[in-house]
Amino acid sequence: MLDQTLLRRVSSKYRAFVISDISNEPDDAESLVRFLLYGNEFDIQGLVACTSTWMRDKVHPEDMTRIVEAYAQVLDNLNAHVHPDNAYPDAEYLKSVIKGGPACYGREALREGAPLAEGTELLIQRLEACEEPLWVLCWGGTNVIAQALQEIDRTRASTAAVLRSRLRVYTISDQDDTGMWIRVNYPDIFYICSVHGWKEYGMAAWVGISGDLLMPLDEGGPDVTKVKLDWLKEHIQIGPLGKEYPDYSFIMEGDTPTLLYLIQNGLGSPENPHWGSWGGRYVLGDIGGASKHYMDAKDTVIGKNGAKFTTNQATIWRWRDAFQNDFAARMQWTLSSDLARANHAPVVVVNNSTAGSEPLLLDAEAGTEITFDASKSYDPDGDDLLFTWYQYKEPTTAQSHIHWHVVPGVEFRPVAGNTTGSVVRVTLPPPEASAVSILSGRALEKGQALHFILEVRDNGTPSLITYKRVVVQVTNRDLRGGKGKAFDTITEALGHPTK
Image (cartoon, rainbow, N blue to C red; front, side, top):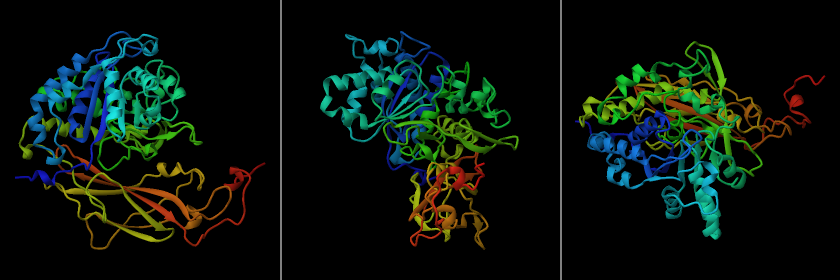
């Protein structure tokens, strides 16, 4: 019998607060079903029903309650499939944190005399209760946040800045008129949101979840198979909880990137949006530091048709097969407490890393060789493992002062005698390619931070993946590789003709 203590575990649970215009369209209910399946990885602080531009004067917390009641029917089965340290939350507790937000549109909630909604009060309480970050996942309008900020300013001015510093907002575009108001008036809030014209959702990163169901999106790139209704009916709409997962009307789960961003599978680092994760990749719009608004970035990905795609949506759809398989596996957990009847993700260890989701952070001298050893990784079900190593170049481009958009590639070389690919060697780029300021030409003691991803896939059904990110800070102690001259322009620095 499989030992539950061998299952993948998270060392700490992110505090999460969901705000949803549930019942405006089916995708919010879909996202809530998925969110509850990952409830063992979250410290769920609130589930608040809100309005949006698509449903302006009603909120439906009762529809959240209905889904949680279905979750209660499968809770024992779910807990049989996770590490004992990562139990799922009690259904009665979840029902106690379901509240309604302001039953009005956007900034109407800020008018003088507007009542403070229960959901707003809960958000303020949760910010005050703990110094840890509170991840607020917004699937509709943001007037719950706006009303909370206004109330904090009015009644808690001396602690307002401290409370704002605990906020981590990831919102699915702007769906009312409070989003921009928040970012203008409180630029110090950590805020992930795609920027585009009003309702021009096709330009946003989050549509990479399944937007190709509705509109042209990187045609030939993403594989639509696992977001179509027939796949969802077979793999997701099963059992008591799966029956609460409705058919989509427009696209599947447009709000889900917010929670995928926080999944602790070894890929992402929520405090570093530019690193990339199942929920996309984002960079600061203001490098001067006046605003903490993170906006869409883009990845270059090889699509299903073999062509290259360089888009913001690719930062999400590139992971689609992995996150849909993971979803399907967890839905299988709801059907039986028998661990032998479902698949569980691999556990990954590289060198002296933890077996958790934390990245392995290393300093290494430019031009030197490093060995990465993942041979202690294992699959709790005893499945065979496939080890795939690759470089994630795009996070490195965020260091725009070092070699600008040029990120030198590396080769992952197998070690003699290791037939699984679990042990590889890498030679870091030389200092002139990884540790020189692009305009000044000066050699730097600290150069590029190179991101390497180990993807460990099992051969279970469905096949599941766990990652380990290795971030190597290139050092250059002897200040080698300097250009010996400064450049006035980026064109000159890159050696391009100026006339």
